[in-house]
Length: 373
Image (tube, rainbow, N blue to C red; front, side):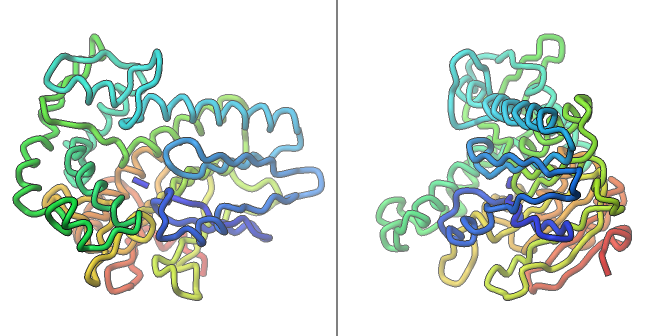
């Protein structure tokens, strides 16, 4: 799943959008948005910032507020190295020497169990537990389906016409018949875990895709470890997974976060502003990774029930302490109805703000306390 932070401006307003990656549909916007402004927050307190592009298919920007250059820069380097390490473990596209990762599990589907690192095992287990206990709308076993839709999206993003795609694939988009053939390989209950040996086994034909949970899980790990290392005030943006450590050091009570308007053509780039400290704000949206065909948008977020791109919402934002759980919830909410979103909020004590397909801004009652009026 999924996300780009847009700008840090005077007064401390951060604006972020959901699900950003290397998408040609928003090339110009993303290039502009990825240039964050470095500035002094206070004369004796500087913002130290590091931005990098080579993990989790998105821009990661980390700002640490500290009066010590050495302390801040050492922790920025640590955070980058940690993201790089976690990216390799959670990657389902590429193998790495000496690392057993998600792709290793997928490569051995139906062949043998795979013993994995404790962190990867915990991510898979927590994703399954949340699926069983919170919502089936975030499904890490959708790999075969997301792979198929990604193939079509890649063709359209490369400039292929509808006719050219039909010639290459036989259909303009995946057919219902083709999708239903994949459904038996998307059952979470067929992911077998051995907690004693930290082994993971999946049936032949299955593929894990941790895109809906991995980035948030990694961000929470990095944030907790930075706190353990003594960082008191920081903002981590792993795309739309924004994790706040502490509060501003310039005397303000909170950070102001601007939520991106999912209508990226609008002159109003912000659809809402929230005041937050020491928490996570995660957004999923249909406006970053998608293709449009015959007047309909096909985004990257797949509804496990239909096996097709979700269409009910334009964006959804979760406010909750844990970035990993917030990432899970953002996908689940994006695939849900208004009533299901409200239920999800009540059951997880999370604040949720969403924009429906008709561009109506909605929020759960507990989100009101964060809104900047």
